[in-house]
Length: 289
Image (cartoon, rainbow, N blue to C red; front, side, top):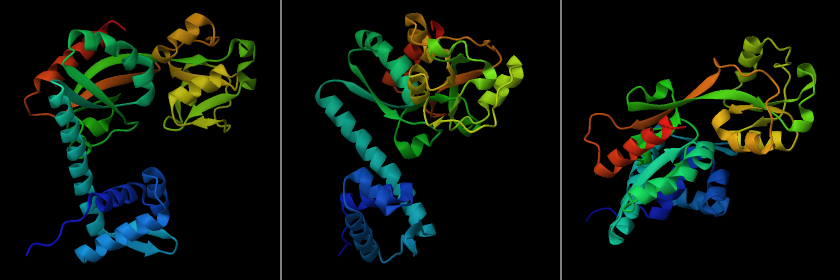
């Protein structure tokens, strides 16, 4: 008789706890109690006869076997999600695409343009998933990523989209502040951007002084609009605020300081027709700004 398979709820608990290296954070994401996550993992370990997590005081750490199993389960769960989306799309007579994208790029650039794609290809549904860092397309189950150019993509097919100049923006009431007195807003993943800008612009900025730090450009932009300080952000993200007067650029603009965005897909395989149409449209949109 074959061994009974683990439940989907137990596998979800494993994948989430493995990703966070924390039962508490997994419980928060899945809207369960920490005890429920612990019981699911214990039940799974008992069924498999394998220790998936090592308990170290109040912390948990993936075992070597647990890490490998969680990685494979993550890929399988992504496949299940993709197949489910495709089934629903097939029932409606459409084709779905699963795209990973930087949140601010999605909200400030791609989504406002998607109606044009929908008008041209009404049979294709584009589903967007938030991805802030390079990731494995295979494990994620996504068909493509729109992200920063990065060495982590070197084994993938990478197509340039556009370069976006970084600009220093603030609320207009702060425009007269001297550079040395202006509070600087920092992006967590780009700690040296202000130092590079100061060197290029020749401004006396206190780049080593810790200021407010934010995870995403969207938060930096809102903080700048609120008058908290000066933010260094891609110009494409703030065109509307600059036109409407909610933000201004009182400091020099340095063409050398920019971010490069790319479309990432799997290499060595024939591109599905729906993805090929999306690629062509995306590159077309990127070329016009």
